Image 1: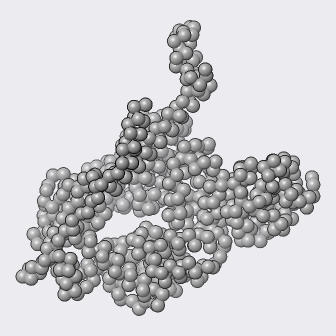
Image 2 (image 1 turned 90 degrees about the vertical axis):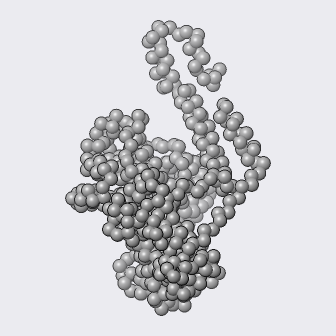
Image 3 (image 1 turned 30 degrees about the vertical axis):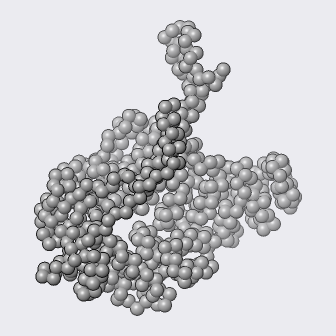
Length: 196
Length: 429
């Protein structure tokens, strides 16, 4: 079975392209009746988690035979991350990811995943909260309270040391409002169609 | 009947141009039949002499004879034969196989039956996906292979693979059963992917499709339709006017418990709904709908919180928890956070005061992305209405339709008035 494309993507760090790539390769291999013992299960599962496609990750896990799930501790560890994501245990994701000895192929991937996850959570906290306790920020981001405060302050949040509360600085939404002339053509066609 | 070697020689020789292929087709039709199937075991080695791309038609005839010969496929080397079929479906030439569509459909059916028997549905997905594209005369046509393909995707849990086929809009349907199965399985795939609005569309089509008598697929589709309606809209709409009479009359009788569920849901109390679900969980489980019912249950919190936004500008977490029947304010906070993440609500949580402020949708529909989005929607609608106009015109030229309307009008007037000619489309002049 030719897994060179997967290896190439991993070394290129094009992680978002990995999930559809693995899916397609699996279908092709299955139609040829190839056995899937050396299939990179952990990479495949983590690829789904990286793009936050929890549905595909869940179905992938469900479709695996029991024997595969039991004999691969690394795969089970990736699944624990997936479970935390599914249950919206925002802090649990960090503990699950940081609390395992990852093999060399996965280590870099996990680091990249954690980085993108952290950014996503921070964005969520920015949009959802006007004030939030330092303890919660640290909890969600999986950092110590010090690190969390420094991270937040970097992005313009202000700390009220007395109450241990951070005030969120909202990002100004960037909207592009320039239109071009081709829209006029489109509009004309549309009106013509409505008249007839 | 000619010998097999002669037949194979014909196939190899006559697969060049379309005229040669037509000649080959008539030869093959003569050779076809039970006598060919009787030699099924001998046919397999001959397949090695033919190429699936260039000799598609001949290959198809031989392959179909082997596949439908009724003997156990393991005689042909079991798994290897499946690989042969899979290879053929992927590599064959669409023009050639469209000359013998029934045989092609038979081969696809055999492939699907075999992979299901081997309990390895994933093996059939890539070949059937290719097969759908080969036999379709246009991406708008529904074929029997669609339903089989979606079924395999469901069984193998490859939901994303099913999506590529579902994204095409279907305008031509030959067999009603294909449509029902397509809509039902398609709805299930969208449910699995949590794309509930699209699932609702497909299930709606299955429920309102023309049917002289109620069929089991439509009933099962209706049960899921009720559940998905509750998740998306919080209520189940009544049957539209174009629903068949048999559906309007008896559909609900076959799905009584789901109707009761929707009544309980509309009362808005989580605990009542929970009790109802638990009391009837065995029935839901036997319908394979328990997972979906649980999703309906959890959507109740979401709906009740959304209802609050219509009355309040700010509300404390405690009040939210109490009103929605959650345990603690922290639970309410996590629910609201979850809804903000999913884009189901626009709000900001203020932990210092323990309050939540609800906002309006910040989208002002002025950005370039939004204009593009509206633009493409308008284009799609324009294309759709042009299509509808042409279907309408075709239908008014249909002789059966004209006879019926002409006959009716004749009954009133007794003779043709010259005015009547105006309604006949200009195509006839």
